Length: 224
Image 1: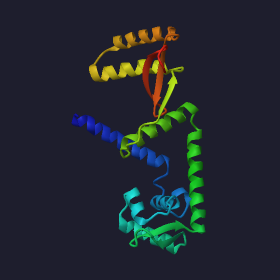
Image 2: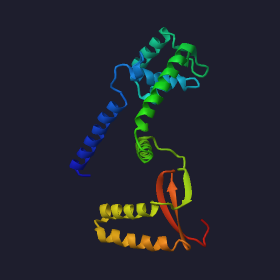
Image 3: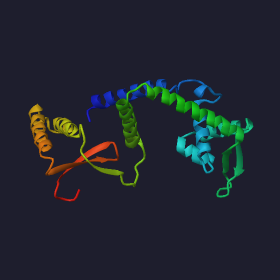
Image 4: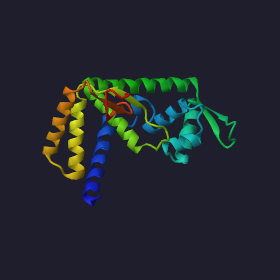
């Protein structure tokens, strides 16, 4: 990859990070108008969803320094937010659970976070909401750890807009990879037009991982 292309992509990712941290209020000293910082709130979340959680598990999940995490956990214990109990599986660790006070604070955080996201998303039209969620899912898939699980596949017939998407993706991919011009796009559009007029014989099957579309064509006499 050319250095200038990599540099531009790094710049774009950093620009997005700055935008999104402002958008969700991650730079606020107190998270969601509570007494906690963002890091502390994230640790509280892990404890709330642990069965139970240990410091080692939280450090691994959040990539946190063990010394910093130990100080936060000690602070939580002093404030009566968590209970510590010797782990039954590892005597070097403590199982961490929320106290009633801690659960109340977590519910407050969870409700505030939900309201903030609802406020942000409700300003968007449904199509933009779906686009936002899809883009976030793509980021999670690309940057997340690899998984051995097979992707969920939804098999369906094509619907409104799907064939137009096929024409668009053909034009983009063949331009990017082979340098073909708009004449190829016109050819694909012509074939797609014929396809739409001959749906009694041919069907399209779409969708891999739900909203991420992939297409396969099949003759209608074959099993779909």
